[in-house]
Length: 119
Image 1: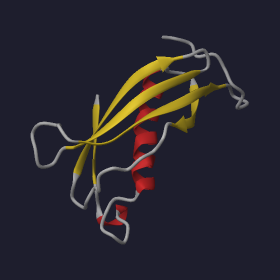
Image 2: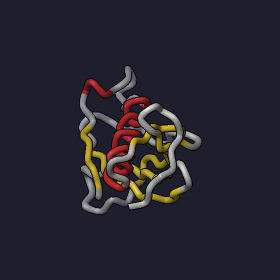
Image 3: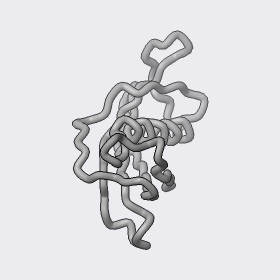
């Protein structure tokens, strides 16, 4: 399932590019939606992203497509790859502007690590 966001003026830094923190928030939010749908009735918290590197500026008005793919299910954690593509100007999603792996840990009602129950 792909998700979309549009870059609005409030999302920009003083150089006219998307704040990196805003992009990371969107990546976290979209991956969290996936882990919540993939493992219903379980609770997850973000524990890490791999090396974050911003390689392309993202400007106002750009529509971004987010593709989230589960890559690993461990005993207490789940990892997803999130790829971000430019979607506004081309019909093909060929230009990847960001990608990262994000890992969530399953927790119980007390916030302690819990075993991931596979659906």
